[in-house]
Length: 153
Image (cartoon, rainbow, N blue to C red):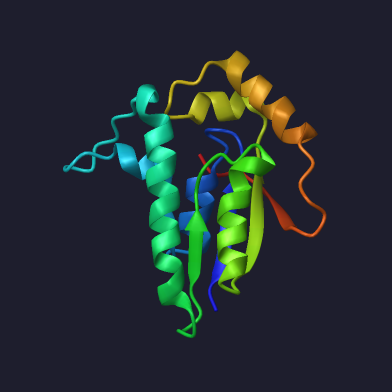
């Protein structure tokens, strides 16, 4: 059984940094990876964001069957995951295969997140995302761990 961690937080909150620091050997699935070119250069294209998220979910879904009965390992989904509906496909797939799932909420103030985000998301949009993040009620049976992302920069 694998341990599945679903990262949650603002762009620039430190989700990827936290994941790499705390689980350097984890398999990481991220829509951001879709935008890496053959040289590893990040080239974000906002018009392809839906395609990137579908690609990320498909990769995650394809790996789950191979994790059954094997040695325990950590698999991380590294997206913003502001809303429960963004988390639920990953959560439901992982649970269907019997894996343990934890939502890791990386908290960070909006000015810091804005300064660090690599997508060029405007401060007003990050502030709205923060309000949505704080107001979104996740199902009570989901395990959520909150970590401090302020040191991640």
